[in-house]
Length: 62
Image (cartoon, rainbow, N blue to C red; front, side):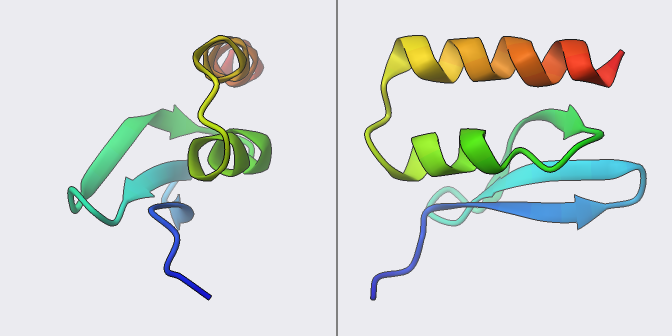
C-alpha cells in the first residue's frame, strides 16, 4: 500500500489537511474532519467536486 499524499490532522481548534509531498498545510482549518475532501484529493482529484467540498466545509465552519 502506498503512502497517501493528503491526510487530515487534528490541530488545536479543528482539522487541517497536510500535504506529505510538499510537506506543508493545504487549505484552511476546518471544524469538522474533512474525510470526503481528503478522499477526493487522494483519489480522482475532480476539480468541480473538490471545489464543492471546499465550499461545503467552509460554510460548516461558520
